[in-house]
Image (cartoon, rainbow, N blue to C red; front, top):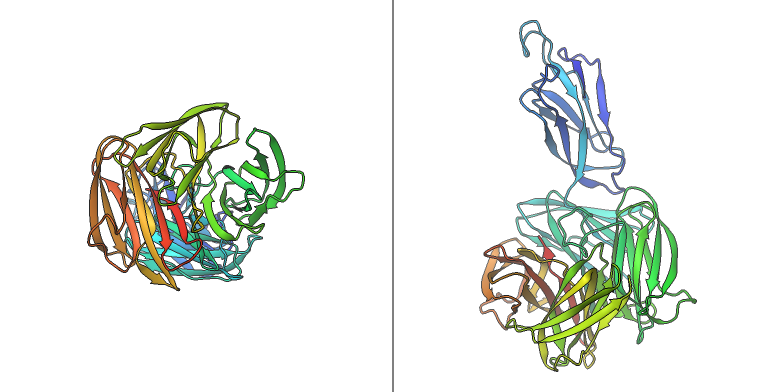
Length: 547
């Protein structure tokens, strides 16, 4: 802590604070100044802090230091550029003998300033052009909000940006930016985001990723210095995977990738330089690594947080019949898959697990919609970081539709992959590593036509605690609550909210869905969205964003 005497509008001393990690293309930051415990050296009633955001634009905030004690004080939220800073001087306007007592000069305290980036969400892959279309949907989870959507090139340089406002609980698809590689959304409060992508009309979707300490779902919706990918395909039944990795940190880093086959054998996947906001897109084309399915571990050499999305598809470019899912930054000893089928109307769901600890043993417990769990598949001694697949298990009868709870003696992660070989539909979603009382789906459709697509959503929710009632609230894009429904769920019960199970749903409808429990019990949920007007691959899927 430092202090100086003040004397009217005379400048004798000044202090400046400049953050070093403001990204190219700007970000939204709330700025806080620290006022320590009261002392004789903190008596200014009007400490003046000036925020310079782009070299010339200035905003001034006043803090009553004398009336505060041992706390961080917000001086506002600002759209900051590289080089932005905060400064203060001892010219507070306070006059000797007037403001701080007879014959006395007020004293200005100088202490810490912190810059907190707000509502940040990373979208590691954005494709616009060459038969790709991307739609970034941002959903406001609170009161009115300002959103800054910044698009980056693969080298981390700024490409384009847009700023817009969202009403409370509203949602918007923002703007497009052809040629951009990735997107970062900054908002003045918490938002959720999803990216819809189509290749020649065939859809895939994934959820935006928050910082490592952000509000996103544990594991699959948070960045981290080490990421885990439960499945990477190298011409596995004609399917290939492409990993898109962005550096969400403030320093350049070296990214290393290791692949593990089903027997636990490790392969060196190479190392890659990655600038802040830069993007890698990696396809497993190393000749020394055989065609197979693998799990992967991605690591930053100097602890920079990474965010990654995996897209898989037919062909070496992983484009045809695409599906997508998020890499994980952590796992858990209990996982949930909410929408699991075995030869149900031609659909079958496979589970792919990755062990993050020592030799892993456990089981996958299959539960029907009424909470009965008569079927289980056991596993044992899965090597560290290795892929393990549960597909079409003989213990589960044809026609099954329900959920699965995976338990293990080691932390694990996983994905659920749904296919319909007759229609070619493919969709992947992340397994849930924990339950929460509130779950957000930034996009939800009911017979909604757009760009030649007729979108229809359904959401499966599973109880991850004891008996509860789940409330479902649908909001249109303006944030207006347009419909509500509820269902009672016992232990292990699950339910699907769709136009076939909920009466009076608005149609056509495009907006968002929020699920919550009435008694604080945790739930997990997954959404499938289908294009009724499409052919061949028409399905995309996301897991619910925990809030």
